[in-house]
Length: 338
Image 1 (tube, rainbow, N blue to C red):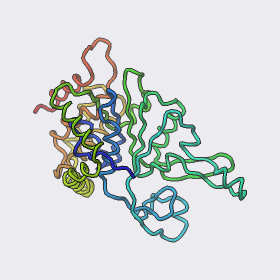
Image 2: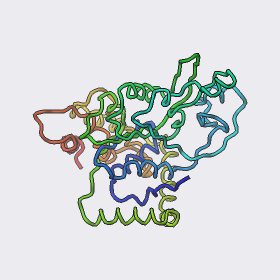
Image 3: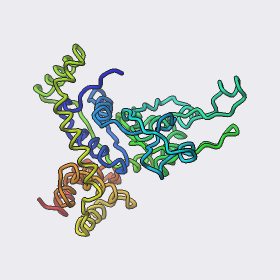
């Protein structure tokens, strides 16, 4: 398997890296949307994070790589037989192409086995391959509507249900949905936009030293991948330990009522629809506290996470020429003064 660019070696793009790390600590945050210029390291960051994460235990021979330690999250085959033996494998990163058919995404009848032996067998799709990993959709704003509807349903339920061609299959499909795109090429459907827990805008670096360092590191990686990865192995190992520790601490992080009230007050001031804004903000703040070793969510965590959790949930105001980021920063300063 080709070596991925080390996560620790990625230059700049701090908000994007922070959002990915938080999604790794708590996948229930709801995925990450990255919008901005081409060539700014979006797909590189996703693959680097997956390579950074520790190997995960999977049920041997399971097409859906179920977690054998999670009795509630097993597929029918793993649940129906003896307790499966655990093996370890890398966290999957699955690309969902824009032109993918629905059969390829959700799975379908295995035609080869059906024709050769007359057996009706299920051929898992991309959603099965992405279970417990990352499903990456580049140019997500150009994704066809029927696939958008499908992703919304599966993201909400954590389960993929296939009923077709005489098949009736139900399997777990929990993944971190990562979407990227260029806003100039079209808007994302509001229903899908709202499903992303965190959203980040990335731009091409404008200062000379940063651009030079990006090119220098990428060139060094391309010329000697093994040597470059070995050079950054210690930094990646330290970051991996932080993620593992953050996951262990997550359930013990306290969310005081005062933090809940501040989150609700922020969303009310900003006029966000529904309650997903508060949920995403609290989950992100709790994951940040766990990652940094704090025992409780504070105003500091809420301040840092508010732009990532709320900017993409803002209603467009034709009378306000400022961007959503400026409006969120203004309200954060009012509600949570530093």
